Every structure is written in structure tokens, then in C-alpha cells.
Image 1 (tube, rainbow, N blue to C red):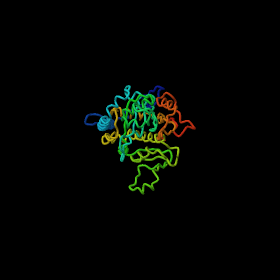
Image 2 (cartoon, rainbow, N blue to C red):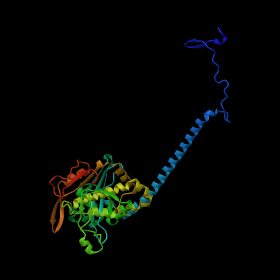
Image 3 (cartoon, helix red, strand yellow):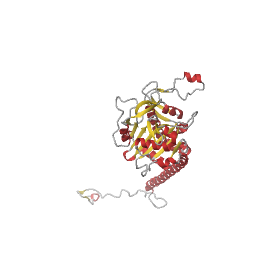
Length: 391
């Protein structure tokens, strides 16, 4: 056997002929080494790791800077808002605080009831002012539910210390204090807070927000009020305010006009009750804008202006809690209700005499009964509730 065929190569599977394999690396140049003695071929991987760690540190710094900027911006906005709320607290008649029922814990976690009063102050109007809008807002965070209850301003009630009269006269007789006592006596609902809105400045808030989006459910041609023209001749020819059916972007003046429409010449069934529904729609649209991200970005500049038309006992923290409850409430958790009754003429004045069904509507607002729409065949002022966003 030739020497080149020896020795044998041995494998696990047996023996095979052939020369012993030599080291294939023999004769190669040694791998280049860096100045630190490490294999240069391993450096790209180490470089990638160092780059990854560097970018990770840069990303972390950016996140921290952004978080800090958001926190500072939020703090500036809160301080501006708190300043405005403090002034709104000082505008409220101090006697009103005693008429309110104590709030049970945080608004964020417990049901709360708020009386909203819109006063009919404005150009060319003199006092004593009546409440042009009366609404109860009840929040229930655990149920993710917000109920709005509109009370017709012509509803005949017993005003404490005054006797039978229209409910909106309570504000003229005794300001928010008497209005709170009157509404509590009518509904039996303890009122924890009150917000008085000066309509003469109401439109300015909407303009500050950049307008509101409102879905008008049917065409409207209003009666003549607040004529936009300078001369009497032009006002005589003017038919009234028009609103087409559909989604509208409204500025402050337009939204205020919409909330004040009592008569729709295109639909005789429109009345003071349906005006309350329009007021609810405007309030909801404002709440959506106030709790939006765009408003947060501008809060340091407009925070105090948002509450300029208000007189209230609510603190800045409580307003923020309400905003959070609003954001967490789905459209299916919105309940929009109204009290109703029959129209009657008493001593030359037109009143709404409350329906016996109003008690069941109040139970719906409190979550003690399932919501029911106005019954078919009811009068134009029939009471009822509807679930869902404003329409």
C-alpha cells in the first residue's frame, strides 16, 4: 500500500482511505487585529450595539423632554383656568352655597347633580333678570351615564315665599338661591352645585373655543328676534333666522340664536320644550370642545376666558373631574330628558301646567326607571327622555 494512502481516516461510521486532512487554515494570513488586540472582524457587531444603545438613550431623553413639556404646559393651563374659576366663585351669591346639598365624595367617583341657569341678560335688556334656561345635569361615573333634564321656563310651580308663578321668575325674585330651592322643591332632587351662565357673554366663550359643531335635525325659520339689520325697514322685510337641516359649524352668535329659537315657522309643533332640546345640544357641543385636545393646547391662553360668563360654586378640580367623566361617557350613556305638561291661560298669562308623568321622568334622570320617549298622542309639551347624542 502506497504511503500516501496512509494513515487511514477514521469516522464514526467506519474507516475511509485517503491522506490525513491538513489544517485548511495553514498558510492563511492571521486575522487582522485592532490596536486593542481584539479581532477586527468582531468590531462591526460591537459598533452596532453601541449605536443602538446611543439611539436608545437619545429616544429616552426625547420622551422625557416631551413629557416634561406636556406637564409644564398642562400646569400653565390649569393655573390660568383656576384663576378664572376663582373669579367665577366670587361672582356667585354667597347665600347660594347654603342652599346646595353637600357633594358626597369626589365627582370623579360619585353621582353629582348640577343646576345650570341661563340668565336672559343682554343688550337692551333691563333687570330683574329671569332664568332663560333651566337645566339639571346629573353625572353617574360608575354607570358611565350623564342625564340632562330641561325644565320649561313657563312651568307653573310654587316658589317658596312667593306662591304660584312661572319657574323662571324664581331667579328674578331671589337670584340663584331661590332658584335652587324652587327646583329642589319641584323635582325632589338634591342639587350639589350650581352654574349661572350670563348669556350676554355666552357667545364669547364659543368664539374663544373656535366655534361648536351642532347637528340641526330639521330646517328652521324662526320668529323675528334680535334683528341683524340696522334699520326698521330692513327688519320688517327680514323673515327670521334660518337654519338648514344637517351639521353646522356655528360661531358664538349663531349658537346663541339657535339656543333661543322658540318658534319654527316651518313646523308649528316647535315650542319652548323643543328650545330646551336645542339648548342641550349647544351645551353638549361646548363640552365636547372644552374637553378636546385642541383646547388643551390653547389652555394657558384661554383658560380664564372659558369661565368668564359663569358664576358657580364648582372648583377648578371639580371642573376637571367633570371633564374626565364626560370623556369616559359613551354616546349610549347620554340621556336627554324634559319635563312637560299642558298649556293654560291664567289671569292673562300663558303657563305650562305640569304633567303627572313628570315624576316618572325625574325617576329616569336619577336612574331609578328605564328611559321612555314622550308617549304618542301626548300634547306638544309632553314629557319624555331620549338616549343618545343630541339631534
